[in-house]
Image 1 (tube, rainbow, N blue to C red):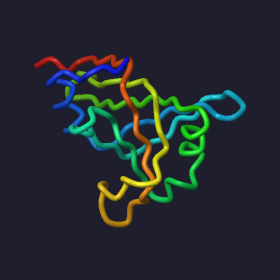
Image 2: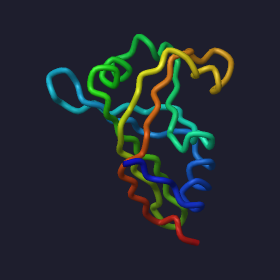
Image 3: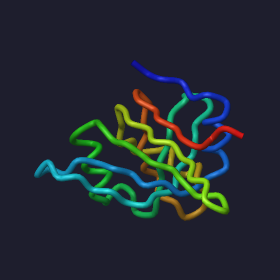
Image 4: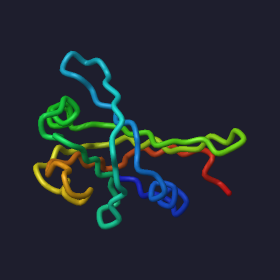
Length: 123
């Protein structure tokens, strides 16, 4: 079941550009990599792009497993951690990555949120 983001969660996602994508390897071990991402307002998804995306392990993992998670977080001074974790169904798509800008690969990972956990986003 897809889960929508709150206004505070969307505002936070819009303010950030780097996240950590977790996928499951063929041998069932986890992999976590820093990635560029965007909140897709039209679909309510998290879209992950990169350079050479179609040839990456994370892209192959998502194509095979159909699941992924992403964590986006930061720390405001003096010590105010905040962030969001999104888990869900994921797709490895051959197009769409161009939205990230010139030089980005056409391939894209799209995460459909099923579980969202946020912290520190309140004013």
